[in-house]
Image (tube, rainbow, N blue to C red; front, side, top):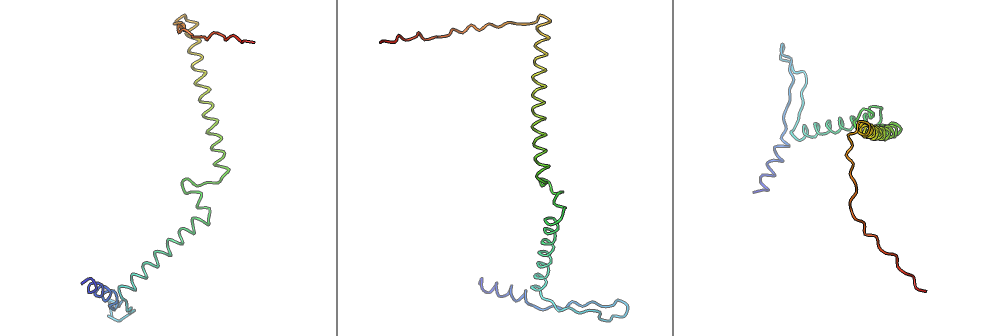
Length: 131
């Protein structure tokens, strides 16, 4: 039965149809096309592939590729990385300076809680060297 369905599908694809364009006022035939479903499918698929190919070629081979997110020239990317590293180091320096100023304010105002290290160190005894 599968073979029977496949042959009917192929027959439907190959059936010929006539597309007739007529003048509405005089009912005169302007253009006549003899088409099949298969030829229409092939034509639409070809147009789609050509349009996709032209779009990709337009983006790849022209300066439009600069507007694609994530794409840019190498020098701009290196400059961006350098600026990001500088910004990170400046942010870290500002944080260190803020902590230093907070500690300095605490010391000058006398609000310092001194914590002593009370852990006992286990220092090993030196070994005697025998001659």
